[in-house]
Image (cartoon, rainbow over all chains, first blue to last red; front, side, top):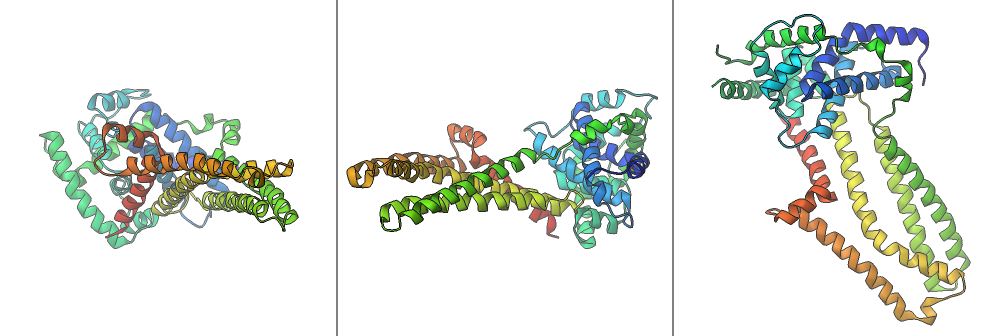
Length: 171
Length: 221
């Protein structure tokens, strides 16, 4: 169903306001810059398609996260090839340096973080992104569709796993 | 520098987020309306295929029903017609279920719910593909026999042995198909079996099942 002009403007405004979610999710689920741009577009278009069914009394960011993660997980499953799950350090550095309108902030842990993210299966990756973005457990549970207790349990396991992964990477 | 805790990476994540903002790779306003209106779901071709399948199923059901109703006194002609009728209904039911599964997909649903729905759709679609493969090895037999009967050539009466050969020629590819699928899915595969698995339904079914298992495991505390 086509959206009215006013609705389109509201949608674009909300998209501008919460666009960071798309960028972060796309960055967490792509293995190259081209993939990331494709994924950003796919998420945006799926949001546009789903927008007529969005209920304004619900938080837009939660709705957006659900769609972004669902699209990203499907994208990753479609594009994953053996040996392509992990991004090389060189590639991530190039990626960060690419298309910078302004100089990027330096943080030597960025490649490590990207490696850690890339090493996780799609659902754990979603959990990690939401945790790193400092969402409360209740919101993570709502987005993922699991209980808060399950979120807590999974995060504890994830922390252990990430700890081991980081030790491996920095050894 | 040591990186021992996940929480240590929160600040790195914020830096990465700010860098992504700066790149400004996504300029939403550049997404022209034409691009939005051209956008179709990834399941578009699946939907088109299922609609065509329903149309074929309806046509086959009508034609075959008329055929067997017109030959109520001829058991073998009724069997041809009823076989095709059942196949027609199967085409409709399978496609309708596919469409129902596609229709319920909601990308705004909780992540686990949608991923489960996609995995179930995939598994159902692949299972029906295999089923169609097997029945497709045989369904042409009543089709040919009914067609010949309509033209006045009753093969059952004139040359019953030919029907045996027709059935046999359906059995061979069906057995081959089942054999290849089972072989490609068994543990401890040979190199050839692995190649078959990579390119056949076997792998896809296994992957769909693996996906469902992964979701179920994630749901467990």
